Amino acid sequence: MQLPPGATRSRTDLTAQLLENYMLSREATGAVTMLLGFSFSGMGENAGLAFPTLKDWSERGKGQSAAEEAAAFNQHFAGLGDGTVMAVTPPPIDGLGTSGGFSLRLQDRAGLGREALLAARDKLLGEANGNPKILYAMMEGLAEAPQLRLNIDREKARALGVSFESISNALSTAFGSSVISDFANAGRQQRVVVQAEQSSRMTPESVLKLYVPNSSGTLVPLGAFVSTHWEQGPVQIARYNGYPAFRISGDAAPGVSTGEAMAEIERIVSELPQGIGYEWTGLSYQERLASGQAVGLFGLALLVVFLLLVALYESWAIPLVVMLIVPVGALGSVLAVTAVGMPNDVYFKVGLITIIGLAAKNAILIVEFAKELWDQGHSLRDAALQAARLRFRPIVMTSLAFILGVVPLTLATGAGAASQRAIGTGVIGGMLSATLLGVVLVPIFFVWVLSALRRKPHAQQIADDQQLSEK
Image 1 (cartoon, one colour):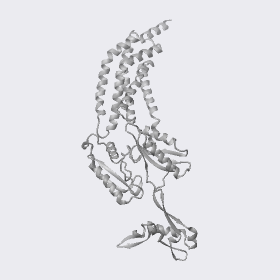
Image 2: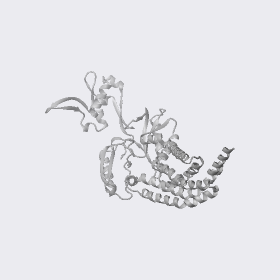
Image 3: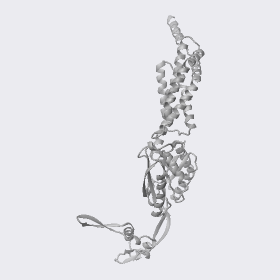
Image 4: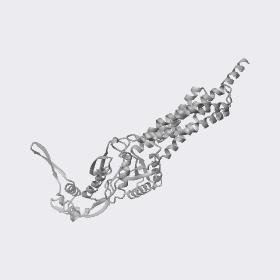
């Protein structure tokens, strides 16, 4: 919760009470803990933080997950005019960021100045919040607030015999307090803290009424050589890896992976003025480090399966026929997940690796039988057609049994349901395509590959070898 700069504590308290009442009115909420004056963005009278505790999964119904509750909260308070309120889900891994989604630091790497960095930040947030692939993007940090600027006439202060150190000590003691000594009281050591009365440090005029000692010990009012004026300034000055920076966080839209949302952020940053850079942080940094490994892992999985089949059949052609059906299964997985609006996340990739084995299993049922018929003297076409016809029922029955066994994953609710639905939906889509299209395409692949390689049946190959040995 972030109210406008300069908002009072009572105003923040009223807004916090409004948020708390709404959260407690939700059936899924069990309790709410409110913190005023503090947030992940920083500390201030206009900041606040709430931790709603949801009820156990067994007490919640459909549409009451953490993500759905956060979406309902954001929709309800989207038109709140008294500040900015945003509900975010916790990070998937504790310690990597303060919320889910993505996080980065927008940096001024060329010394362009704060105004240029502010303009770049506003442009980034404006374009990101208007992008359909990004649910929201916001700055983590306190906005600029009114600040009282003191203009010290050093020449006049020097003429009055007042040093800058005396001015600094007087201001810090009156408005910030100072510990001057300790004293014993009832057997305990207690500190003596000096600070101006609250009524004497509430207005700009209070500053000018302070007195500071000069070099001769005479008290001189600050108003004799100090003037004040209000201006907007940063509450926090943040740096990241040595560069002035803003903390930006956000989340992907429903059905869009964080990788796609991060790619959009990178595109927007590339259009910012030269000298403005960025660095991913938290879980986003780890995701970027691992993002280039997915293609290599899939390739390794395909290679391992292919080499195992080569060792099993002692042939390069037969495993190639089996592996050609794998892209068909992968295509079915992608279409199924896309149709229901699920993101291309790590759980979907686990399902893709599963499809490699399942699609290959169906192809093996046809290819192995076709190879036996071909070795017995049948033509490639006849062997493929007979194998497809005879193995059709076993393929359909085993695939149907597996698909029905995975259906509970696609209908899962409760804790961990998102990962189960992603895996189940991808696997079912891949199995359907690998089964329905596989019984047609595998015989075609068998005839095409062995004809292209001009392989001979195993029995004929043995006979030719015997003739060569007799000669």
